[in-house]
Length: 383
Image (cartoon, rainbow, N blue to C red; front, top):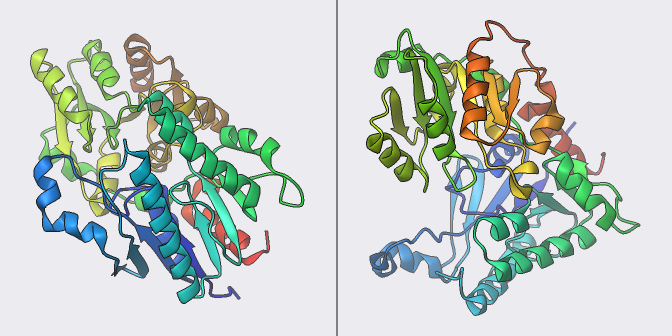
């Protein structure tokens, strides 16, 4: 019999943004009392700072997202380039997190770099990405990267247990753990609801976009700096198959650049859908013939465990991916590995399109139910 626990998960970003914590928190909330923290800093224009939405930043608020209680933490924005504001936000965050733990009698905390390690009966650190590498390689923000590194090092030294999303990160963390703490981190990769993707139906997506008879190459993602969307556009230009179509599903900062590139080059058979609600997204995976992960190759991406790889695979698709270290270690049989150049990517897509059948990967160890059980074992002390 599973003991009902009170769990606080501290996500690394606003709760409205798709992330690793969503899948596991929703699964854990079926048997446990789950709390999460939230903060909003999505302001991009001067007028945003005169809105009521901005004023809500300075107040504590809470609401229920299904069975999950979301705690909105007061925050000053923008703080990205002001270390004094970041320190103030960290101080405020820490006070509220400790209050949430104490007032709700939290049994276990799963923390990330956004706040230093709090005091809790059980403290678990979830290292979900190489965050220091991201802020160095893509944001060129050495000061913030050092702040993140300091907090992550504190978790590695103080947490009762450390979880890493990839074996690459596990290799980095293991030498830093000091007895009597568990010397080795626990590897809990990103997960996928396999049944959701396998039972989906993409036929109405093909009909909606008039894609019947086409070979559908697709990328479904949040199109940030590391995702390589422009590389995929260039690769698609190099394909000679007139019956191939490129389906781009999602939004993000690189989307506008990609749309302009397609218009400038008069590239045909490229469809941009924009962001699709999660409850509808599985059908888009089933509409594809090929799923593509054209990521940049660097320290940040080499250590990632891309959720999209698991979702493409759960939908039974061949995947073309740049040669990222963790993806190579995962060794899924449906993945075609290529170099991170448009020409190599195009060659990989051609190879994938010629595959008439492929071995279905064994995804059981990535199923959300299996991974949630691992989390529960850590939280209950039985692991």
